[in-house]
Image (cartoon, rainbow, N blue to C red):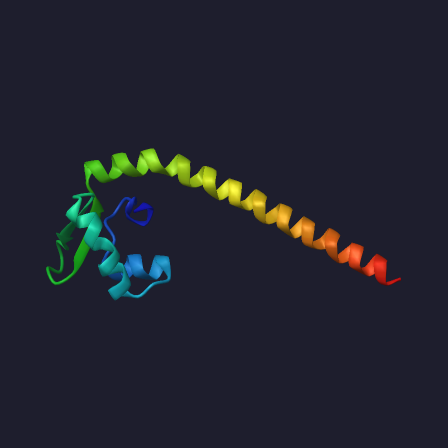
Length: 100
């Protein structure tokens, strides 16, 4: 949803490129968001064949509530990963020392 929180509504292709996914995957992932009315599909004003995606008011509200939780989780996971790397380095050092 955060990839839709931009100034100009992106096309499905633009969202797919930003996420590193194919259009089919993005389209499938949008279905629950569309059913919940968190995202709206708009016709491009210059090319009606092109569909653009926009967060609805409810979508913006849900994203604003969820973003702090997502960021907290990202920071927590970064800490876990850092501790894991530190643990691996210390374990490798112990192994090297025991082989001497």
